[in-house]
Image (tube, rainbow, N blue to C red; front, side):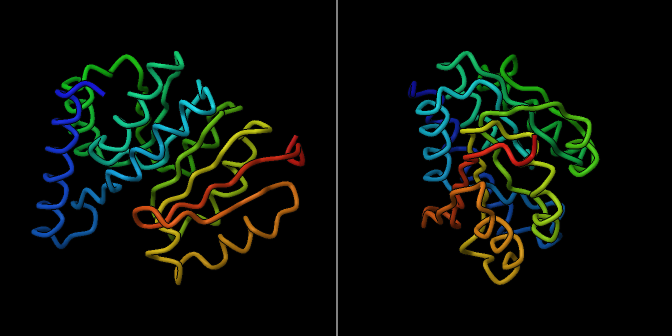
Length: 198
């Protein structure tokens, strides 16, 4: 990674930490992934040679930048979903500053509605959105994930008490192979091994 982009990502990470320490309203918090999670996502994109990437939960574009940066090496493209117009404006500005705008399409709206209108298959899907809806997202996202594709879900360790039903759904599905990785807030890596949704 070029030093200018690495410096910018560090700046964004610090902005997110400072904002979230100061702001109590949930919708106004950035809730960014950790830098280690960003590195993991970038490695997975490259290792899979992922070209079609979906992100659920853009926020200010911090995680989107990690995905789009890696997608430059795979000639890939990121589609990302965010309902907040204010956060979309931040994300657009940050992506432009990172020089990655052309690698990203931002969809505004409720994720459950937007996902229904998206056509798969995607190579890699990153889920980092409103946790109460993770279970509702599961079938929609898996139906749009290619065989051999990967679903990466954030917050499965830090908020395990909220995600029991989601994790039971994922881990109990014989068409999936899934493992919890203790990086950042905990990432669930779920590999789609068969075509039950086709």
